[in-house]
Every structure is written in C-alpha cells, then in structure tokens.
Length: 528
Image (cartoon, rainbow, N blue to C red):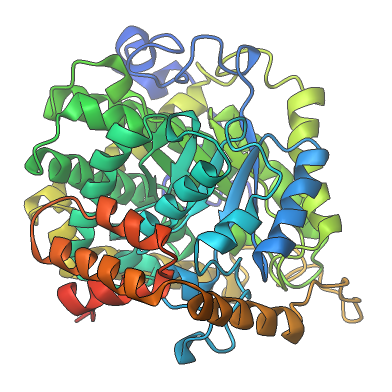
C-alpha cells in the first residue's frame, strides 16, 4: 500500500498519517476524559483499574456432557483461571431436551447439554459456587438456567445471596444477528424483566443481563454499529424495566455488557472508551439516574471468533494476543481469549491452556496493567474515540426515530446494516484489499491440521439416556402439577420465575418448561 493511499478503520474512519493538537479541536479533558473511576468513565470504571483489581480471566467452556465440562472447568481453574464461563449446546439454547427429535445431531456439539437440575449439579460438582463467579451464555432459556444454577447451589448448601455471576439474557441481539430465540419480542421482554426483579430480590449479587454487541460484531457489524446497537438495546431493557414498575437505580447497577474485540487495534481500544462515555451520559441525562453505579458500563470482552482462520490456525495465537491486549488497554472487566483451533472444532485442552496463558502473560509480564488508561491523551486515540462516538450517536438518533431498538429490529434495520457491513468486508478480503495472513496472502499449500477435539457418540447416547431415566424416576404427577402452575403464571401478569423454580425443583426438564411457555406465548418467526 502506497504512503499516500487512504487508509480506513473497519468503521470507515479515514486514518491520517499523523495526529496532533489540531485533531482535538473543542476537546475538553475535564468533560470528555475526567479521571479513572469518575464520570464519564472514559478512562475506566475504577480509579486504579488493574493495579487494584485485575480483570477476571474467564475462559469460555462447554462440551458434550456436564461431566466432561466439569473436568475442563477444573483443568482451567487449576491453571489459573479466575472465573467460569459456560457454553451451552444448541438444543439447550432453544429449549429442547437432548432426546427431542430436533436435538438430533446437535447434543453437546457447541457447548454442554443441560436438561435438568441433575445436569447442573454434575456441571459444578466439587466447585465452590460461593467463591467462583460464573457467566452463562444463554438467552431464550436464561431464566431456566439461572434457576437451575440457584437450585444446584441450594442443594449443595450454598445460599443464593452468596452466588455471583452473569446470565446473558439478551434476546434483542438474537433477533438481530444470532437467531437462538424462541418467543416473540413482547413475551421475551417480560421474561427478561422478570429475571431483573427475581434476581434483585433473591440473588442480589447476580448481573441480570449481559447486553451483547459480540454476536452482532461477529455477524459483520462495524465497531461503530456494535456500540450503537448494543447501547440501543441497553436503553430498551432499561425502559422495559421502568415500564414493569422497577426503579432505574435498582436495575441499572446490575446491568453488564459484552463486546467483541477484533483486529483493528486502536479502533477497538477507542470503541470501549467511547461506549463507556456514551452510556454514562445516557443513564444520567436520558434516565436521570442518581446512583453513580447506574452510569458505569462494566463489560466482558471476547476476542473475535470471526477473525480466526482455519488456514494456518497457529496464526490465531497472535491474533488473539493482539485482540486481548487491545481489550485490556480499553479497560475490560473480564476477558475470554479464543483458542487457536476454534475455527475448526471445540477447543482442545492444549489450545485452551495457550489462550489462558496469553491473558496471564499480558497481565503479569507486559506492564500494561501498571497504570490506568495508558493510551489516554494520545492525539490519535482521543480523535478516534470522538469519531466513533459521533458515528454511534448518529445510529442511536436514527434508532430513536424509528421508535427504539425493538421497532428497529422488527423493521430489519439492524439486520440490513450488519449484512451490508459484512458484505463489504468479504468483498475486501476476496479482492485482496483486506489482507488476512494465511488466507489471501502468505498461503501454504501443504499445511498440516492440528489435532482436534471430537464429541463421541457414546457421550451423546449417555446424555439422552440420562434425561429419559430422570423422567422415569421422578414423581410425574408432581411435575405435571408444577408445570400447570407455570402455565397459569404465563397466562397472568405475575413473575414467572417462582413457579418455574418449583417445577424445576420437582425435576421438570428445561424442554418441558420451555414447551409450556411456547404454548402460551407462541414462537417467533421473522418477517425480514
């Protein structure tokens, strides 16, 4: 690329050859930066950032059965992981038990299969739930998995007020980008706000939603779109909570966010800073929050799965390290680093350990954790932060004009914007304008594939037999009575979680509870 040829970030922001004071015209450090741990939180949410509190190293894991995943959890904890993160298989995500015909071929493939409280107990067997923070990447069935976790802890003697973690519980991005929804938006928003209310009363240390830009970014959204769509969804959830009679300062401090981190290093750092500043202003100006915690955007980051390549997969170790470093420089509160073989299969133990060691080397050897916001004040970075914020605000204004996030998603606006951005990226790769090492430059004709993790047919058969045995041994009449209680609650206006918990305690399965709600709420079928 010639020196005088224009260069752009993934969001289309043109990059100048050099930056200086003239690029920050109108920039007010007191207003736009502040201090770490103080509004508008551009420089981070804690005064000393990682000197006082390292980010949580939370490696995502889930495979085959609960016992297999429990073994992986123990392996990662033994090697220095500081938080758990659960991946669930597709049937669990969309409310089907492992023996359902629609689950065939998918059990345990993209994560762990969880059909009942017995599976949840096996998943966390021997793990001290009062001392470990657990994140669960689950959406349409989030309320069920949270209740199963609470029940597993209860039966292990751990009270709910000692539990900490996060449940993703973000359905709006499912309609926009990912597709693991069950019910229409209206009932889904009801379940989400029911989780807010229930957890606030029973599991006070739990983060009740992880508002996710990750999956929209993975589907092709730019960094500016990721900020805007994620914050617009956050606005919709806060408004839904207010409409349900909850107070903003009771709900907002337990909100968390989830972002991707892709390969344009400085744009990713700027993205996190811009998102924090924007959210602080949204909460204090639009929602008039009074509790300082309500204005804090706390977030988890995962390095970009879409940036990993099946070709020359060990190159992904370098990609993940760079993405992880930009997330840390951007001030993330927790981090998952992808394993180098994830473009090919579920992570092997060897690859998962390298991914964890990547975080540990950044934290312990690089020095980037020694001071808060070490890139703050850079002419380039502050200019990029301002430009990303301006582009994201344009999107937010457009979404507001359409009636908010739900209306924009139902109109297909998010989807169209994401598809268009993804199309532009793919064209640039195919033309060679966007270089991907090992894919369209520096290819190798005779590379050898790494050893991959495979899920055995025996493990799947064992999971299917387990749920069938549960149904045969439980008190069937008690389960039916409790499921009828869930149906009555769904037809009314009360909180759904207490009757769901009692059904699950009686050993109703995830699929059975989901089917009761399907019968009442129906299933969502997109029109765009």
